[in-house]
Length: 196
Image (tube, rainbow, N blue to C red):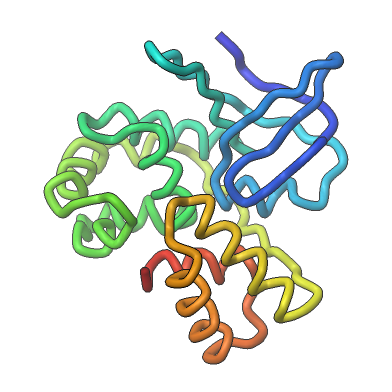
């Protein structure tokens, strides 16, 4: 129904963005890849996927068509919903995910929160032949943080929004920042997701 939404970035967090277009604010669920691409932008265009359920109407937005196409491939697999697909795209970059699927690494894929080994194997079986059709991989985006404290706060906030307990998130992020004090927010969330 909707191809993309262009407008002013009214609000952005690691899990959602609010784009204002023609006086309407659209609440759009996003992945960390998209967050890193638009977090410091005043204007943005997000390629969207609109899901209508009995109890909700949900917009998912992506900075690139490739990421949206990968999202659509993921939700085409039985047992993978929109939030699980977004979690997968937040844990692994597009190129990492393509590599995991093409090499059949179900053990690495099941590290995503809420994804079991059987579903990971199903994703690999159903999508391994489709990865070639995805096209050019997007360039990696980096999030530049001003201080360790800002990285800590944003990473913990992102994990809490993704459904993890605040205390557990803080513990993991503290350990992570101790090991890698110069880490960026996006990478900190990715690594924290793998440690949770």
